[in-house]
Length: 436
Ligand code: AMP
Ligand code: GLY
Image (cartoon, rainbow, N blue to C red; front, side, top):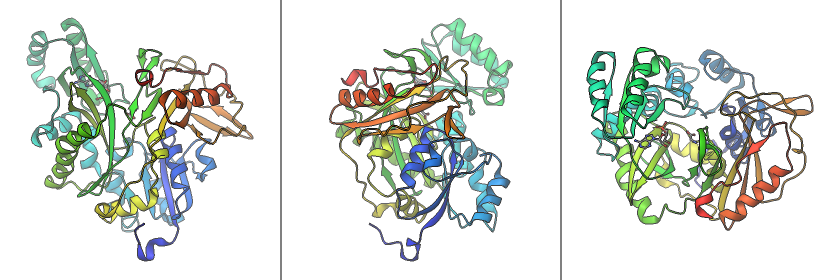
């Protein structure tokens, strides 16, 4: 373990967010020798078991700043992308009373990796990172865009440039569909300002995986990789969701494949940020696709994934606050990562109707029963009310289990979920199906 000199005193830590990712982060932060106390804003019923939930809006920078002053917060960890893209990091750096707080997450210029698809694509191009060929269009070259779509190969991928709550990517199977979608995005603001600019991209055929690093702007540590399952239905059918489950490690992420990922994608990214003068201290999530044996980068996110976090943090054996201090001090080159070699699988339980309309406020039963030692329950859309826990979102909770095989891990999570009940509970029973 690193010696942090005078920094071995416990720290007041604030975590922002309220999903399953944040429950997993809170659970992990709460195990650190340096955490005391932990606040989570706004949190959920699960995070309240790891620290103190605080009723703060994650996009109200002034309120967050005032809370940090009042509680003498020494470290702030940002779960979701939105406050980062909007410049929370810059806000903290600009205030004398806040600038010394360890801030985990990039400033707005670094968060453009996620906040602007056009920026991310030109960054990839400038730094020689393999990705799908693309063009970008706005209202100014709209007609050119239509002509381009008429002659494009199918399927073709349209992406709103800005943040669109995970919905801004449309894969079109015909030219007619692509032109209609293009019109909706640019002329009818389908995704508001986010689709004023559209990236039109070649479709890549392959198998996806999520790779994560924590970087200090110069060095990085590679976290366990994961594969998530986005479709609502078993057999990967039906509508796209935020994620119905995840598996880590990913069987096809062999050492030789991961070496290519590091050499061709991760290192050029970290070096590229430094070359462009972007100070980046935080997580980078690489959404990759393996085409034959070669990795291509589909997207960057400036945060951890959900539900991937619920399998990667339980596998990570290092003290998370220690890693964050090393990142802020630009000392990640001195850190060695330790990872539980077992397989972790998480299965997400959702509300009936999700990802379309769903109800909230149903009582969740069965949470008080202790789960087997190889399983963990992480809350997503839940809220406490008196002594009850109520559903409060589309994704309600997930169960992560460890085992020697994917099959056993899924079975353990399923057993736990069968003991939990709320009206309309639904979960997939085939997470990790291609690895069984
Ligand atoms: P993104 O929001 O960029 O992650 O895109 C959402 C999903 O769309 C990805 O997880 C992929 O499944 C798919 N996707 C995005 N870009 C491409 C592409 N160029 N080729 C194939 N699939 C893609
Ligand atoms: N699970 C994908 C994401 O967090 O964006």
